[in-house]
Every structure is written in C-alpha cells, then in structure tokens.
Image (cartoon, rainbow, N blue to C red; front, side, top):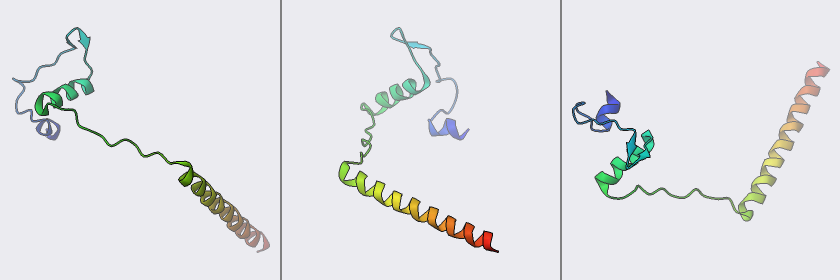
Length: 85
C-alpha cells in the first residue's frame, strides 16, 4: 500500500490502465513520465554524469597500480612467512 500512497492513488476508481496513447505503446516508465509532465508541466532534470578527464584518469591509474603492487608484495610477504613456519 505504500507504493499506492506514494503515487497518490487513494482508490482504484480513478486508476486507468492503458496500453496505447495516441497509437503508441506505453510502458510503465513512460506512463509515469506522462503523469509527471501533466502534474508539473516539465520533465525533471537530471545532472549529467561526471566524466573523468585525462588529468584525473592518469593519477587514478597510477595510484591504483601502486596499491595493487603493494598488495601483491604484502600477500607475498605473508605467504613467505606462512611457509617458513
């Protein structure tokens, strides 16, 4: 029932389920967007995803490689100590 209350569906008398709008097939997400457009008269905006440029990518790769190398060294050290005992 929480789902119904979040979408302000108080009863099923006003609920209309359709397969097509203006001769176009409607999926659930499109139907939801139509409801948002009708309610607010605009589409909700989303912030575009941030892209990692070359100035951030190269240091990230270097740092990741250093951590991977140190991890392999540490695991090798643990393995050698384990084999000695």
